[in-house]
Image (tube, rainbow, N blue to C red):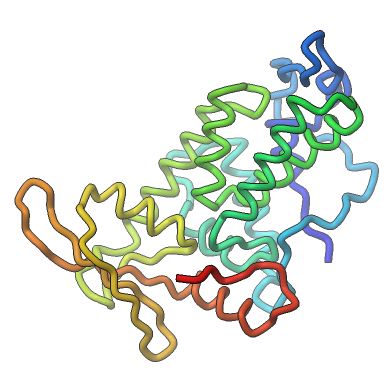
Length: 266
């Protein structure tokens, strides 16, 4: 199954007329920073079929509308950066697309490997290939807060990897959406996360001291009960986080051992 490619993000980061010039080696043997004219968000024609990306799970019926809708929302975020962007909807669709990575580890490792190749591979052809694949990976996982955070770090270090302000916009929006998904007082009002990284980011943003975590499952709903302490009042209370989306996927992976992801041992 062929994963969609987002030409708009290629315009934002990578693929536009003149990209071959951008991928030429400098005296230091690195890919040049993208010239400003490549940020005009014009769509470049796709002349050759892209290879099947890694980290793809078997597709099911719910993916039918999720892929084009995810594509549409990512394009909207890149082109317009609207203040009222539907980050929650983007996150929901991400949990249903084939490249969904609930842990974020595989996608982050891949973009780090590609970033290293872009800056250090002595072969200009391979640098160009890494340059293209980097944008594809970031676009495919733009709703994953761990991937966006990694892309932000790379963009701050070297603008060849994109506009840091854009990735900061995405990270803030994703986090805001997570924190508005519930209040965590009980299972009914639990925070709803699409990836395990969202849960980590949530607890960090709440600025609480984690005492212990008790995972639970009831009626097909997976949730974590976090006993936390307010560092200022020293009051102890429990935060409920619904982790059904990532845990359902990891359970699917456990039952289908031929797939790529592996559930980590606790």
